[in-house]
Image (tube, rainbow, N blue to C red):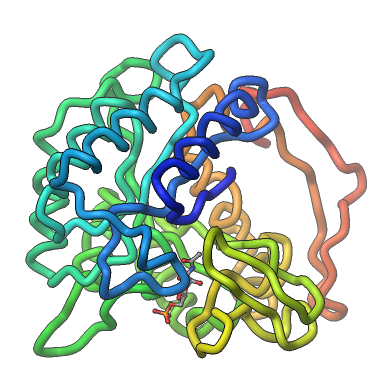
Length: 319
Ligand SMILES: CC(=O)N[C@@H]1[C@@H](O)[C@H](O)[C@@H](COP(=O)(O)O)O[C@@H]1O
């Protein structure tokens, strides 16, 4: 799945128009837009200049155009190329964003947010009332996921709990999924283990990758933002140039799986967290087309295709 960062409005629209046909032809599983309706206080590595408030006419026109662009060359309720949009649920106009997204069959993903616990919880309650065509036009609601839980949002404080405990409770109830960047740098490994124990079926490990992920030291861009890697590949996370702000994950998904297994996460929790749980963002017809058997060698820390490696057709029940 391709994530687009917060970009100048016309560039974002152009990018969706360019990428939507790739979803249509099956090259990409879907698009995730990380913004532009983000908290100006929690942009992280996203372009603060291009963040928009949802209430304005300009914002309305943009979101309507994005929804339209995601539908280009498509037909049918599963055909929207945009599958999720990160937004800050505490913003004025957030309710309109949620309503527009659900109506288009797009999942709202709370993230890059400065929400209080109450604001976050209220958003989840609002969702329950909102009509959606759902997957396959069934009206069956997909479970939204929080965009990289812990990163680009307030941390848990005992007198100002913020969004984290509300998200954990909703995930434990089965109402929400939680993205985690498991590169060993964005979130402490012990915290990743705790979240996996608390809500095992809800964790979506994501790479949060950019062009700088696992790249040798050098300069890159995240949309309009200049970022860089200073260390060697996965040893350090990319940063915004001139700042300490992390700016995307240090490892791709296979690296994240290696980390999880090395931290002692049992394979039966680790493998769904990098595969089937995140795939629930997608309409069923666009989910993974099979599975491979594999072996984890705990001594050498390697993952190898198990004998025999099996790839099965879409829709075949698992072993
Ligand atoms: C693509 C993207 O936006 N990635 C975010 C970044 O914006 C944020 O700065 C970082 C650390 O957030 P933190 O300092 O709040 O932990 O997490 C992720 O890398």
